Length: 309
Ligand code: ATP
Image (cartoon, rainbow, N blue to C red; front, top):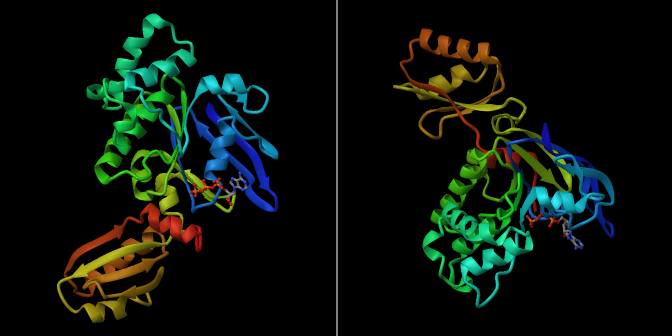
């Protein structure tokens, strides 16, 4: 079952198409990373899902509820963390969460336990008595995440939750999101920190100029450069002869030895790949390493989105 179904969404600002026929299904319990250059339409898509913006065409549902005609129901299902949010002065963390718990009509008798659990979940238990405006940026973002969880939503829409955080704070945020995934939440998360998304997502959707460029499992998206991969072939000696030997072989697009080993851009199939290794060994080279270098999301993103901004 899909928790999120987006079908042909279009949003136009004047002559600017922020979203063009954007479709995406996210199965229940999956974490989907939404990536794209600035202005690609990520925030627009998330705002529509969060019922804060009306599309000009297409439709979207969350747990079967329509974002246009069943907004109150959709809001019960989702926890939305916008990319910019305010926190209030002169409020303590517990008071801040208390305010949202009241807004969601959580019974008074349940609130203090709930708030304690949420602060625990986002690693802010020791800050229960701190004023919100005095928290660090990373802490404020974790508090904002706790706020989205007050009503125990099944679906989370997180717009760049780790932006502007230092590496330690990003790692903490990542760990919390992993925890939420283990709690079987369905999560749509956008970010510019692409390699980090790979570690916590099941699937990746790449948006460019409002269009979905690619969508699939993380491994497929990273390997999606039409089957092109990089092989590392390291031998004990005679590297330049090896480069000449490899160059005309089936599946080889190019080869260079700048790194001190043969970096082979390869489009062949698995048979071509194993045949290549066999022939290198049969020709008498002593092979130290013959490995596929895993492409990363950064590469896939650059390859698929052209110039980006
Ligand atoms: P970023 O990574 O910079 O947050 P994004 O992928 O979230 O970008 P959006 O904020 O959704 O992109 O913007 C998509 C396009 O729509 C951009 O060209 C943007 O300028 C335009 N846009 C967004 N909101 C408005 C608005 N309220 N009025 C006019 N144009 C807008």
